[in-house]
Amino acid sequence: MLDGGTPAAPGLGKALLDWYRRCQRPLPWRGERDPYRILLAEVLLQQTRVAQAIPYYRRFLERFPTLEALGRAPLEEVLRVWQGCGYYARARNLHRLAQQTRTLPSTYAGLRKLPGLGPYTAAAVASIAFGEAVAAVDGNVRRVLSRLYAWEDPPPKRLQQLAQGLLEGALGWASPGEWNQALMELGATLCTPRRPACPRCPVERFCRGKGEHDRYPLPKSRRQKPLELTALVLRGPAGVYLEPRPEGALGGLWGVPMAEGPEGLEQLLRRFGLKEARLVGGLRHDFTHRRLQVWVYQAPWEGGEDPKKRPLSRLDQKILALLGAT
Ligand code: SF4
Image (tube, rainbow, N blue to C red):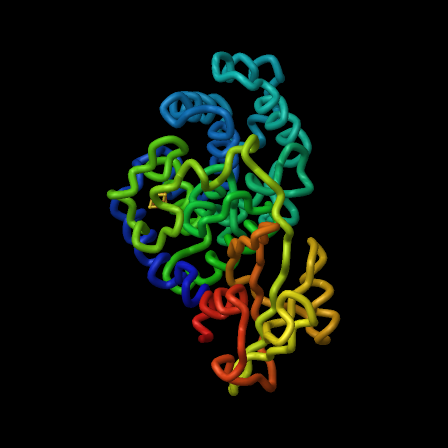
């Protein structure tokens, strides 16, 4: 669940689910729980538009109704049924997979071991067919989350963490498969790359990137690498853990523990003897000479103090506001 200035999971999630249940497109694989059929739909949709994928989906299942039937068929026949759909490697991979196994594994980890199944496809099948709580992040979901959270260039690992946190926050009222499909549907129908339909969007009021859809996510050509920082907010009953900033531009001020670079979280966890912390959001901060991308994590803490009693930098104020801690 996300707090404070970050789009809050309960309100956002309920609005998204409510819209999805009312407005989802009636596609032949909707409500499907057969992992083979779900896999086929996902593989088709990777490179084929929905309208074109539907007849292929039907035709393929008519001829190869099960994974076993597909595995028994000669490759030539599989390619003939796929003919016209393009990207034939997909048909070859499906056929190879069907020759290796008659039953698809029921977990994300098991599915990932199969040839040709990347993280997105495995997560989609595991969540939709087997109800495993694993977030499926494809291009649509990346675009939606980048805009919702106003992230120009979210690294894949952070995006996955955020998507996973949102999914887990939604489990009270949505199944993992339904949640994943709702986010994908929003990206496919309203939050489209060029002209998102923000006035009709169910989560418009939570969206920090609306009106700037060209910036979120930023096209590759415009990306300038900011300095990556991790901030760890340790929260206890009395407030948050604060420490004095070292001498220099921020000398005399106080703030939450921070560390630079992609290993920043690991460094902070080690420093405080913690096993894990929860990602609650990311924010941009511009100093005159450099841009920062700050990833904010939170963990419980025994002590802490009232942050209003200490002088804080603007960046620390933003971090604490993100958590609703000021
Ligand atoms: S408000 Fe617009 S930019 Fe934001 S999620 Fe909705 S469609 Fe996308």
